[in-house]
Amino acid sequence: MKHKFIAVSRQFGSGGRTVGKEVAERLGIPCYDQELIEMLAQKSGFSEAYIKENSEDAVYTNLLSSIFSDRVYDTPITQDVLWEAQRKVILELAEKGPCVIVGRCADYILKENPECLRVYIHADAQKRAERIVQVYGEREDSPTKRIADKDKRRKAYYQKYTGEKWGDAENFHITLDSGELGIETCVDILKQLY
Amino acid sequence: MKHKFIAVSRQFGSGGRTVGKEVAERLGIPCYDQELIEMLAQKSGFSEAYIKENSEDAVYTNLLSSIFSDRVYDTPITQDVLWEAQRKVILELAEKGPCVIVGRCADYILKENPECLRVYIHADAQKRAERIVQVYGEREDSPTKRIADKDKRRKAYYQKYTGEKWGDAENFHITLDSGELGIETCVDILKQLY
Image 1 (cartoon, chains in turn red, orange):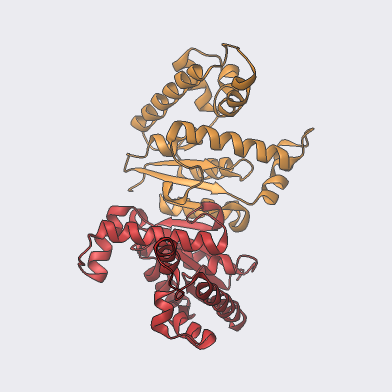
Image 2 (cartoon, rainbow over the protein chains, first blue to last red):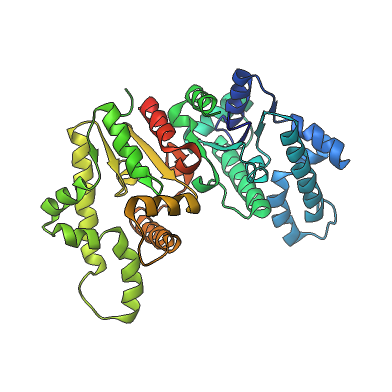
C-alpha cells in the first residue's frame, strides 16, 4: 500500500464529495469533509458558522468588498489565521492514519507527503447544473450562476493560498471527469489505485 | 463499449506514447502515432521531413524568428495548411473504426465525438528527465532544457490551434501522472475505461 491518504479536490457539483465518501467507505477508512469544520473550530477558536462563511468563499467576497468598504471584520488576516489552522489540522490528520480528505486544499497541504494520492474530480457545467439541483434543490439563482460563482470563489481561494492554478492536471496524480465516467467508475479507479 | 477512440495527449518524456501503444496492443486496435506523419504527407503534399519540422515545434520557433527575419518559408500559413490536413486525417481515422491516437491535438479535434475518451499523461520534470535520457539517450542540451523547450513548444502549438490551455484537467476525461502511478497502471486503467 503506497498511498495511505487520498486528497480529493473537486469542482462544485461534480460529485467529488460523494466519490471521496464512497472510496473511504469501501476502503474502511475515515473520510473528513464537514468534520474538518468542527476540528478547525476547536483549533482556531472561531465558531463553525463563522468558519463556513470565512473560508474559500471569503477570498473572493473580500476581494470585491475591499474595494467598496472600510470594514475591519472578515479581513484577509482572519482568513490567514483560518488557513494556518486548516493546514495544521490536515497535517495532524496525516499523522493519525489512513484517510480521505475532501477539499480544503489538502492536495496542496499534503503535496510533499509521498503517501498521499492527489485527486481532482470535475465535470462539464451542464452535468454539474443537473446534479446540484438534484442534490441541493432549486434556489433563487439559476444552477449555472451558482456553479459559476462557486468556481470563481474556489479558484481565487486556491490560487491565493497555494500559488497554483486551480484545475491544472500537473497538480494531481489523477483527475477524473465524473460526468463522463460516472461516479461509480471514479470510485472503482481510486479504490484500485490506493 | 462506449469509447471507440482514445486520444492521448502527453508531456514530452511522460511515456504517454508507450501508454497509448500498449493500450492499443492490449485492446487489439491500431495505434496512430508516427503513422500520422505519413498520412499527413499524403494528404498535404509536403514531405514527411518537412512535416516533422513544421508541426508543433514550428509555432514557437516562428514566433521567435518572425521578430528577427523576413523569411517567407515556414510561415504560419504553412502550419495552418498542415493543421487543416491533420484535422481531416484524424476525423477520417475516426470514421474507419476503433483506434488510439497519440498527440496531434486529437483530443481537441475529436472533442465533439461522444465515443472518444480524452486522456492526458504527465509526470514531474525529474522523472521525465530520467526517462528521455533512457529512451532517446544523452544530447548536447541537458534533459531539463530539452523538456523545458518541448513543453514551451507543445503549449504554444496547442494554444494556437485549440484556443485551450495545455494541461488543463477540464479538457480531458482522465489525466494520469505516469511518474507517480507507473506506466503499467496507466495502461490498466485506460484499458478498463475503454
